[in-house]
Length: 234
Image 1 (cartoon, rainbow, N blue to C red):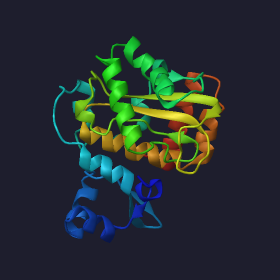
Image 2 (cartoon, helix red, strand yellow):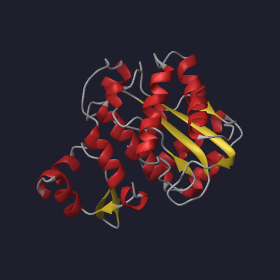
Image 3 (cartoon, rainbow, N blue to C red):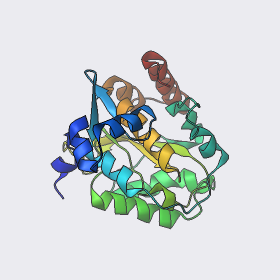
Image 4 (cartoon, rainbow, N blue to C red):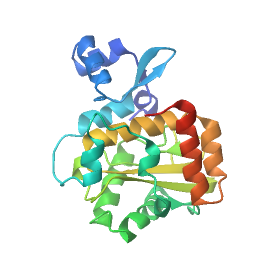
């Protein structure tokens, strides 16, 4: 599959035609937070790769945790920092192939019993990577299952992995990847909200640089909190 096509940025009109629904319907979904989107120069823009993930996610399989059910409520403010726990931050990711990296990222999930079947979860993550790379941001990758409702997970969290030496993760720009944001959830709604937040965060290279060069788990969380306050993210 052509990576440049997967990384295509679509306008409101283009995504309307792609989804075969009216622009008015797309705008209504944007306002309700039901579709992943970002604003560039006061215009809505949609990444085709993210929209494809949104389309693929459908079937309900696993029960949702209390955290997930709470965050799904539209009136609840959503901050990325809420899902970042110290035990889910890995500072010493060892370079290797994709499966080797994903195994390291899944270790704290397994150790803390957040995933019920590590091998199945890694299989789902690799299926997504084989479809097209999740290294869609400069320096950063966002590994996730293409259908979150199939994930054998018990809670909603984000694992952050840092590889200071950089690793080839088949990024769309050909650069090495230094930081990984692994999304762990079985909720389609939360999956999309997390994905959108991380993509937005990853566009701030100064914020990424602070995390990549951090020396403690507390400094990672602090950097994300400062970014949220600076950008008034909610």
